Image 1: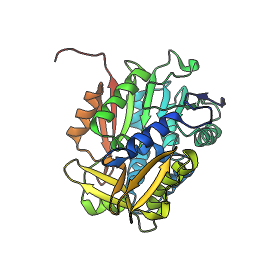
Image 2: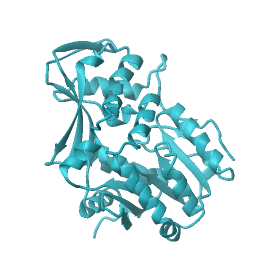
Image 3: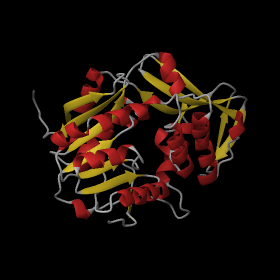
Image 4: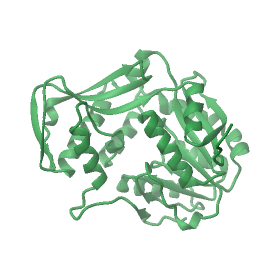
Length: 328
C-alpha cells in the first residue's frame, strides 16, 4: 500500500488563503448577477454535507450511477482493460470508486482534489480497502492541467469523473475542463464520465431542494466558508437557498437569495445587495445522448460506449482522447 501525503499544487498567500478562491469570490460578487463557482462548496464541511446529500431519498443521481457501476463491471473490464492508472478528478466516493477499481484491476490510483484534508482522508480509506494498490493523492485545482505523480509516468491512464460534476459548468468551461483533462492524461487515455439526463421538472427540483434541508445547509455553508477564510462578515441568516429549473439552458440553478437589504465586506471590499437579489452558486446541466456526445467531442474526446440505469435517469460514458484533427 502506497499512501504518501500527496503533492500540493494549490497556491496560497502568506496568510494561508487560497488565492484562486479569493479571486473568484471577489470577482463574482462584483458582477451584476453575483455568482461564485460551485467548486468552492467543497471545504471539509461542504464535502461532508455533499456526502450526506447523496444519501437523501430525493437525490437520485448517486443511486442511479452506482447501479450502473454495479451492473456493468464486466463490460468496463472488457473495454478498459487491466493495468491502467486511474486518475479521479475529485476525491473518491466511498461507494462508486471501489466498484470501478474492483472491476478493472488498475495499476495505481491518483485522486485529484482541491480540499486537502478531505482528499487525504478519502485516499487513506480507499488505500485500506485495496492494500495492494499504490495510491497517490494530489491536492490540486483540476480545472487546470495537472502534473501527475512521476510514479505513474508511462502507464496507460483512465480518467474517472463521476457524479455529473461536468454539469456544474457552462458549456465553455466544461469544454475547457475536458481539454485540460485530455492534456493531463494524454492521447490514448480513456475517460469514464457521468452525465445526468433531462427528466421531469419536479424530480429535478426536488433533488436540489430536499425536505430535510441538507442541500440548503450545503449552499449556505459557502457563505460561512467565505466569512472564515476571506475575512468576511456576510450575514448568513439573511440568505435563503433556492433551486430553479432553467429550461432554456436545460439546467437546475442554485441561488442564495437575500431576504432583506444587506451590506457586507469580504477581504476588505464592500458589497451591498437588495432584498430578492441572489448569488448564483451552482448550475447542474442535464443532457441527452446528442448533447453528451457533442460536449465530449468539443473537448477532444471520442465517445466509445454509453450506459444508463434501469430508469434512464443517469448516464456513464466512456471516451478516448484522440489525436487532434484539422479536418473531418
